[in-house]
Length: 419
Ligand code: IMP
Image 1 (cartoon, rainbow, N blue to C red):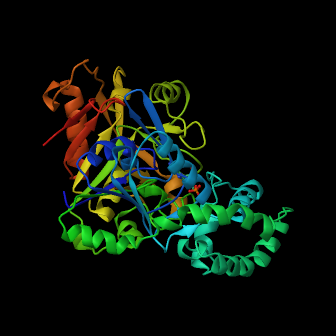
Image 2 (image 1 turned 90 degrees about the horizontal axis):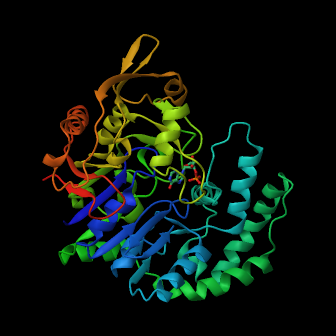
């Protein structure tokens, strides 16, 4: 493994945490490159459970952990995570790119206010992600390198505040004062200053030294700000292109690009979901799969596996392999359905249409499969029931990408490597 990229191929929450966790065992460096504390993952080691929103899960394994330039960092959440890990006796090296954006208190207030007042809600995590990236595009964001220099930080804050006051006032909300923000943020900056390092340069040097590097995407392909179901998307780029620009690495350095997908599909927040299920079956899958948001606790919407989505994600991201997770959740169902095309106005679509309003009107075309019941002990793909192998082979054939990892439970040992 030189550079291995792990991406969500659906709407986020595909089980990337588990895939990253065991790949991290053989990595020297783990990097996050997009989003912020809108993401959440849980790592279970023995009887200890660690919940992260910012620090890559490699921290538990004592790896070098990087927060690259494409990230939006909430400094107080980051300090809490670092302190939690220190208390747990975990030693790891953390590097934060100077170019990463800082989430300010007014970003969080604006995110909440916009959601509250919107007629058509996005269903954001209200962590300030959208307003923070909007400020980056608007050139009024505060970068990590500015945040850790008190004089520059004050200047940048002073320049931003009048606009933020006006914007918040339009929602009837008072912006926190400069004094209040400085009181909270200056001590955080002092705690984080020593972690500053050019992650792009570090990764290039590490590559030359033949180090093994794992890139951990947050969210999923269809939440991408360009290629997702806009406007029901996040504000960063959880796709291959996003990793390149969110770290600062050339495309040739990527060796493996793993698209992670559940054996079914979930979505949290608003937006089209062509294969969405309602009623008893949806409740069954939600409960069995424990489909509740790690960050917000919201119940996730549930549906059948959508190969039109995987085909599009794979074409744009160049997946070299797929990881299929949560196969166990489907175990015991009598019949399964997989969507392999969409229909709209008499036309068949093999890829997700660019226009979200068209996606909203698409109907799924399903292939039905016999259900399967997974045995207790599974060591290799041969131990899977024939029906499960047929299901997985159909995915490979339709997406034209081999499935190399199959996860059938939350534990590390509940994983098949299909070489
Ligand atoms: P934001 O990223 O908080 O702005 O939210 C935008 C959309 O992305 C909403 O539909 C969120 O529910 C969704 N979203 C953001 N982060 C995640 C995630 O880590 N998993 C799943 N959905 C997410």
